[in-house]
Length: 309
Image (cartoon, rainbow, N blue to C red; front, side, top):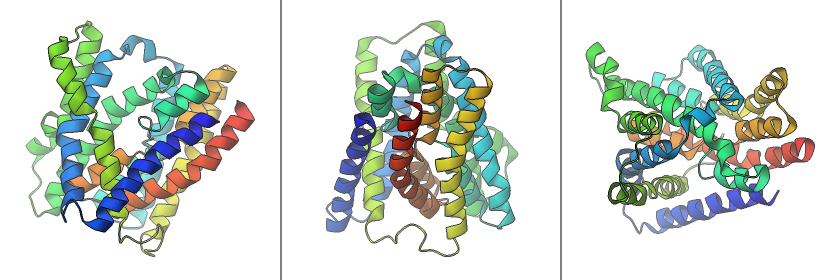
């Protein structure tokens, strides 16, 4: 139980610092954009490469990965017809879909897994699927949608080449290759990569905190409210229920069942907000979903641990 609380306290503290910076204007009017872009182009690729290069890919191809892949994909897809039926902008629908199934497995999932599940390795399948599949797919789609929103003409060559122009996709691919081949670059290379990668999560959390200054509470925008309620409902309740059902169906033991449901109940990752800012698509939905799902996740996670732990 302490791990759940500790994870939220860590995130809350950094976000609060960001809010203070936004309130005082200490970093200037463009601080949110600069921090988000720095995380996207510099910090996150380094973090992805370092994480995946050291991950035993063969070890995480397990039942846990199956549960993660199936439930995350289903939840993301569930939002699409709802967003499209409401005739929301394409970029916002993409962000809403990502926010519905992309969990905070890094800066929240790792401490919770360490203290509640007995080890950070429990979130490795989630990290692998999100970093290697969801991130490249969603950011590539957002790249194309952002260009179209800016008045650019549809360019199929650009659309299909989006993954190879995406620093997150390239970093993920390079990390998987290193893991699969057993080749890890020397310390002289990995140390600076790790140092740069360490700025990714703090930068995104600070940018998120800055964005909260002078922003309305989640749900204040009536036009956005139905989308927000849908995203938060899918992330907070539907996702863990699906994970519980699938884990039970494949005969997972008690510990694996708890791990699957806890990981699925994690709130929307702040990465989603960072990507939304980077491509200027669905920023308010990403911010509100991240905040609302994080607040609701605490009692939900405590309840899950009490029932299944």
